[in-house]
Image (cartoon, rainbow, N blue to C red; front, side, top):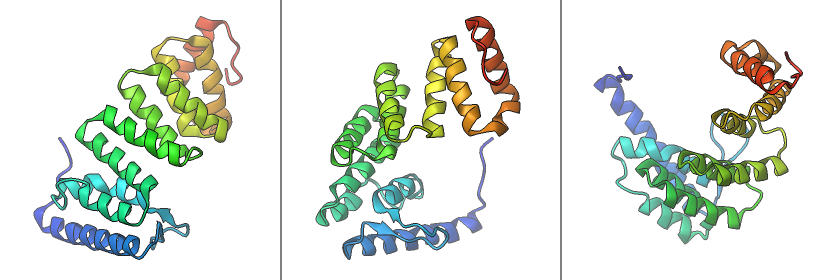
Length: 205
């Protein structure tokens, strides 16, 4: 069973989302491409902010599509942000090919943006395009070698391929970054099997 929010609690949530959405739109219209949230000391790019809020806005029927958001972003020449929002909208609609196209367009505008490369890798992996996913994830690591989320995705690809030496290699990297995961039972089982099957002596056996 899914979670159920009582109707009397829905309207305050809806009002809060409406208020935030209106505030963010007004700040974009004033030319800001980063916004400070109350509980975060660092400003957040509006493309990430809107892409993170899109699903709730859609489910609560506050928006039927992303066109109004895209129009406001493009009116302020925020094309990178618009492509991120467009990509996320396509994700929500299940149009993964079009999501990749928008993420690729955003990547061309901001080649060093790890978030965009990571999302490209995720979409390609979901579509079963493992080679393209690996290319995106490897680009991520060339920029940020210790990105744990990316390394976990790569480990998953190696697990699906039963590439035992690579499983050991990527798990060693994960454990280097997060020693607390060494005791996690599910991961430990996969790691021990990979060490045994590959004949590779892992650092954390």
